[in-house]
Image (cartoon, rainbow, N blue to C red; front, side, top):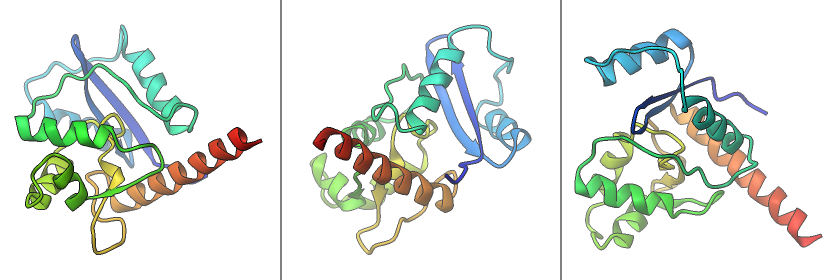
Length: 167
């Protein structure tokens, strides 16, 4: 079981605004400050604990769908792409071109890739499930190695879940 590194879950009073993975708490805190330069950053005193637990349960493969209240800024196109990503089943992938076609914009694969790259809530919006048509895993905001490990973990967990259902 390969580690994905450190995890940071941040929220506003309206919902989760950042789910990030990194090598150290310092790197993650810096990333949070860059993403929200005007925010007053403080440790959790409320619902964040349950949202963080939901992310960890999801990462452990015990809950294939991660459904969190989100508070992220996005264009209409980004939301359209992100909703399409949320419909990709756990353990499966789609190409950027397939996602573009699924939202009725078949010539927008590059824009889909850009929407994935700007996704601030890893796992909650599963941009790691989108791969290049040419093969391989492609890039990932939180590191290509993490993307590869996430996809391998989801495929394995999906096979294990199917095996248990088949018994």
